[in-house]
Each structure stands twice: as C-alpha cells, then as structure tokens.
Length: 512
Image (cartoon, rainbow, N blue to C red):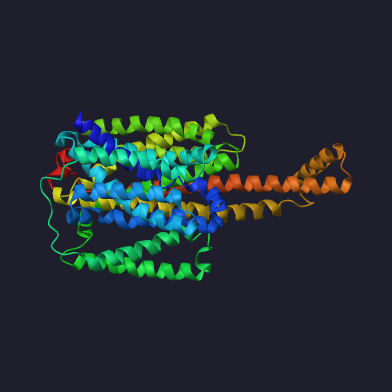
C-alpha cells in the first residue's frame, strides 16, 4: 500500500510538471489583457518555463548526488508549488515571467527523479511496468494541458491555472516527507563543475529562446535572434567538449557512447516532436477552422488519451514476454503515421468522429513508442549510468517538443502564404469557376437588398474568406504530412541499434 501511494504521488508530480508545459498556451490573451502587456511579451511566460526545464533536466542526476536525492526532490516540489502560487499573484507580466522561470527550475526535477523513484518501487523483472506507469504521465500531461487551461480560463480566471498546483504540491510534499527514502548508496560529488553548468545554461537557454521566439520575430531577420543563435551554437559546442574532457562533469555525456542510448535519444527527440506538435496542431485546427470550443476539443482528445493508457500497459506486458522493443516501436510509429496521414486528409466538412478516430491512432501509437524507447535507452548502460541516461533522454523529449512546435509553426506560416498566393492567382476573369463563384455570391447579396456596388464588394469579401480558409486547411494538411515524413525518416535508425543485454527488462535503476 505504501508503495502504491508513493508511485501515484510521484507520477502526479510528473504529470503536474508536464501539464504546465502547455497549460498557459490558451490563456495568453487573457494574461496580456489583465496585466496590460502585449501578446509578444506574454509569450515569454511560455518561453521562460521551457528554458528553465531544459537547463535543469540534464542536471538532475548531478544535483541529486550533490544535495541528496530526497532533499533535492522534496525541495523541488516545494519550489514548484510556491512559485506556482506566486505566478497567480503576479501583478505585471515581467514578475510573472520571473516566477514562471523559477517554477520551471523547480519542476525540472519532477520528471527524471519521479521516473527513477517509480522504477525503484518494482523488482527487476517488472521494470517495464514501471516504464508504462511513468509513460502515462509523459503522454497524458502535454495532451490535456491546453484543454485544461482553456476550461479553467473560460470558467474561472487565468491565475487558477497556477493555483491548482498548490494543493497537489502540498500533498506530494507531505507524502514524500513520510514515504520517500534516500537511496541506499549515494554517489559522491568530488568537485562541482561550475564551468559545465554555466555553458549548459548559456547554450540551451539561448537555443530555447530562439526556438520559442524565432517564428514570432521572423527568425534571422531579427538581430537578437541571430546573436542568440550564434551564442547557442558555440555555447553547446563548448559544453559538449568540456563535459567530455573534464574529470568530474556535471552532465556525463560519455554515456552517449552507448549506441542504444544515442539512437533512443534521437527517437525520443522525434517522439517529442510528435507529441507536442500534434497537441499544438490539432486544437488549433479544430478551434480555428471547425469552431470547436476548448471543452469540445478536450472531449476529442479524451478517447485517445484513455486508450493510450491501455497501450502503455500492453507494450510493457509484451516486452516482458520477450518481444523486441524494435518491433513495438515500429508498430507505434506506424500508428502515429496513420494518424498524421488521416489528419492530412481532413477538410472543413470533417466532423468530430473523424478527428477522434485519428486521435485514437495517435494515442495508441505514441503509447507503444514510449515504453520500449525507455527500455532501449537503458538497455546497454551500466546501472550506475542509468539515471544520467534517463535524464538525457527526458531532455531530448522536451527539446523535440520545442523544435517540433517551432518547425510546424514556421512551416504553417510559409505554406499558408504559398497556398494563398497560388489560390489568388487563379481568381481571374479568365477562370470560369472563379467568375461563377463570384457571381453566385453577388446574386446572393443582391437578393438580400444590397445595391450592385455593395453586393459586389461583399461578394469579394466572402471569396477572400473562402481563399483564407482553404489556404489554412491546405497548410495544416502539409504540416501533418511533414510529421509523417519525419517519422518515416526516423524509422531506419532502429535497425542500427545494438543487441540489448540479456534481461534488459530486468535492469534496475535502483542498483546504482
């Protein structure tokens, strides 16, 4: 019973952290209006949290060793909870951005350490069940974040998207103070790698800022985006070189010598692209083009999320019976590819049932990917290296999400402009279809009592709306096809992975 309570508690903490990566997305306009800020300034609320996450996640193994895992984890939960409350109390946008960054610094530990704690609660022969349970949080958190944020903002007010963390955080803290113990063996930190930490913070914070702000700032047309890109490139390059040569690295990149971990990390990056990009594209598509409310959108996502939980448990059981992770990952990627293909065929005449069916393929596909990827990542690592490998793998998922959203957002804008230009070029007096459509609209407004001039003007406005709508539909179709191509291109990597150690599903994180 104590084990079950602790597992539920730490998974709840991880879900809470992951929900907060996307819960504010739909509340930005309310925040900006309430705090007297522009939408561009308000978007830093998202950016600051993401920057803090990608800085702290790869450092969790080092900080756990330095401060003691129990102390660091509980302290992080307290920090996350406190700064969640302060976010709701913020009186201006820049106070909110600062508190949001500090919230993200506390939240980073909730992901990797929660995963480690869940693994430790199971015997070696049931490690895949632990992967599945933790996978529930990884999958469900980002999926329900925008819907939950939209519902709270619609029915309450935006500060409540932060206040809901407070009771959960207090409960998690209380349970962990009672039930969470320090690992039997504690790694010794001989020296603090301040240079490595500084280079990591500079490099990934600049990279994350570029990814979050690039499309809004027209990418390299903006001077500060150029400078941040240069700093990110050299900062990350120097970080990698330093961590590979120093005797006491803050982030042990040497674990990436494991071919299985390296391939799993790339595929986890790709899965992050899929998870976060699809969560971004689908709600925008159904709300912008089909006029669904946030609550209706959440109901569309619900069946896929529920079935994904079953998919996670099934994949764990199948792994337990000795089926190769590669087979399960390929099956899962095929499911996600079917989702993106079906979504690329949608139109403004599509209904909720069509989208729900597609989202079920998404949920089951990504669920089948999650557990075996975790297994593949640690399959060739020594037990002492597994926490660092897990942290790097989690970081790759977050970075994949950031890259994915940046790519599809930019791609949407580019393809929308391209399709609009092509469609407009066909609206000429030489095109009988365009002329017939315009005349039909004009006759409609004439029948409503408008004079010829106004009827023609309003008909042109309707035709422009039709072009805008159609170019939007076509650009979303292209974006989903882009995700299809990315997943297909990633598939061959699986066949370069090495053989897994015997009893890979029996590797225990708690052995370190």
